[in-house]
Image (tube, one colour):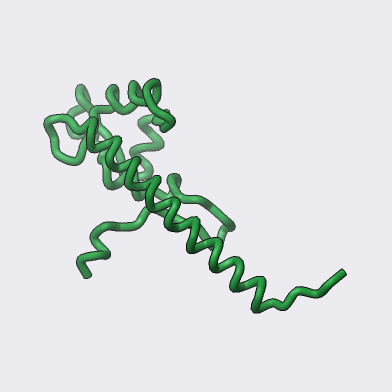
Length: 116
């Protein structure tokens, strides 16, 4: 078999990562837009019942249990009768990242970084 140069393989892996990043960035924008479209009276939040119901009408699987959402910092339980999902915390959660390995993941971009 032919030997492949390490630098060539590294360059190919970098190019694939960059291309996937752009694809993933588009998916993140759609996710944030979908959730923002469901926003209730409280800015940046979606009622938990609305969040779960949306999974029947889109390709997104909004099925995380409240305890999981709480652990990821995406559950607003300040009003136990009207719990809600905090949109930016949900979108930026590690669980929404593509885990390539335990050392490398492609996650949603933090829009605040553009301001720095």
